[in-house]
Length: 461
Ligand code: GLC
Image 1: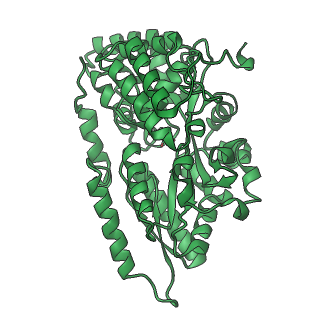
Image 2: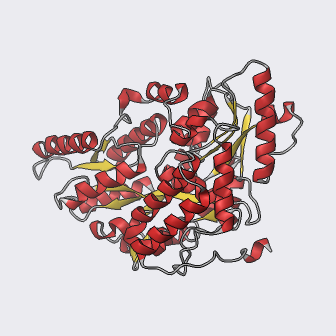
Image 3: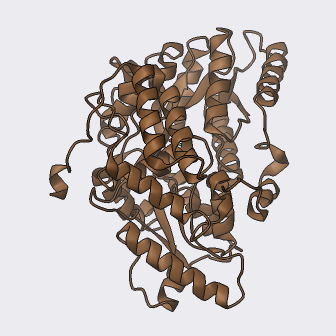
């Protein structure tokens, strides 16, 4: 059995992060910090004549992102006179959601604006105001279907500011060195290439080198990874659009089994504890041939001083019988209905989702915009030629987590899925056993019926 261990790469994450902000092992720390920040903020709440200070709580995905966000907030203050305090947040998705729920659940005026993961609108809808009336002109400019992901019962819970999709990062220099002209199109090709490159690099004495790194920690990122493995093999999306629980099927089981074989062979044993940052650290150190990650991983890979600068590229993830798909991720901004400054909070959301601000962010962070036209804008493409691939992926290669059909039960469903897949990766359970137990658990939790996943989408026939 593979036990998750803290690898050197994982340890080095804490050196990468500033001031240990992400080192929140337990929920109690962030909750206390946020409550303390709110208390202090409360003490300094302005009188009627003083400028308003908003509180923003969001994903805070990395140091560079945090710095760019601070610059954006300063610019917002210059434009509007409204100040903003950006609060830190825990790294884990589950911990973030728990913190958001705790704060919103008190009903007190805490943060005014919250970051909302694309899978959360149905879980948190009741706490936020409807943004639809305020963004009628902007909504049609977003990527097709994006506003829908943040809409619950005709209410726009959050305005998207960042689109995410799972991608394959690959080392162009190593592919060349080992005689490959293109990145792998199928998972089988990836396995073969990863094993060969890994063997070759190790033979040269690079004992730390791995073929493929990804996110196997028992948290939301595992749902994203495993969904890609199974959906691309025709194994469905756990619970389908028509509320059929489809997860217990041979294609999904085979996809999980294959990933379990990667652990300790082309992927490090500790990959079962890896989050996005852990895989990125291995990758940026030059110690992996392939990495699955979000587009945001580009910035650190291409940073000045990165050993792999200009030696990598991004492609669609490999696929199988079900095509090539990446999990849809992304974040929006929502206004708390308990905010004492809803007008100013709306201004902030408007600013952070505005076209020129997104253009700048795509240039300095390579962050995929949410406005469709920006994928064709020369000033964006000039610095991000890879947005062409992203555009294609967003239009044809997305698999969504079943957060729309499971509503507020999504987190329970995802947690059950994570436990099942993780138990297969760590060899605690066989894949058929884990899939059958998961199916029972999902029937109990949701009350939905079971059935096979749908056939291939028409465009893949
Ligand atoms: C990224 C995605 C988000 C996903 C999370 C999982 O932040 O944008 O949708 O839930 O990763 O770690």
